[in-house]
Length: 201
Picture 1 (cartoon, rainbow, N blue to C red):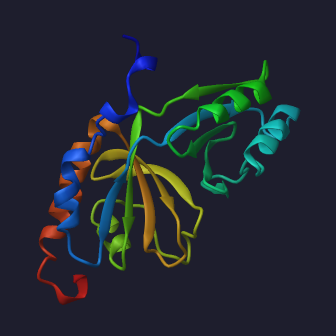
Picture 2 (cartoon, rainbow, N blue to C red; picture 1 turned 90 degrees about the horizontal axis):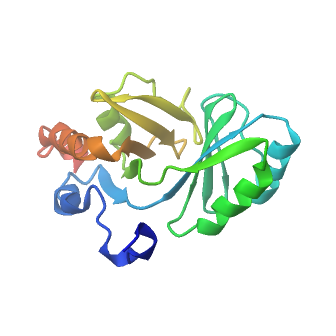
């Protein structure tokens, strides 16, 4: 049996066992895993013909400003470096990989890194405060807007953090699968002292 023949319904996400702990968190923070998102590492010269082809495939130009992202439908494009992006799409987006490979043919690279990270979706009125317990990035809405994305550390774990709302109440935290359990435990523990705080209910 090869990897290609394994049925998708037997896959286990890195944080499948944490669902009950996430559901028991105070009401001011909601946390859930977004498992099995398609994640494609894209390398191409910005401003090149190949980059234009990629933009046509994605339905949006590649973001050219550091620490920003772009969205086209259900596809996210996160800036990682001057010639590097992470394309994030729903599970089962194999056709997108093929189209991107054709777009950069001979002028770039597309690598499937879907198994490298899992994604935590953190929402709620205290989401930013929870992240502030372990992250040195200034997440205040005055400087961190919807679409911002940074590679940083959260509780000493390397993460890719995307802000999805100007209200500072909606984030994606993308973490390597091998660190996912550790980060989940830290987030749950960081909420422990607030379980009886009325502002967190």
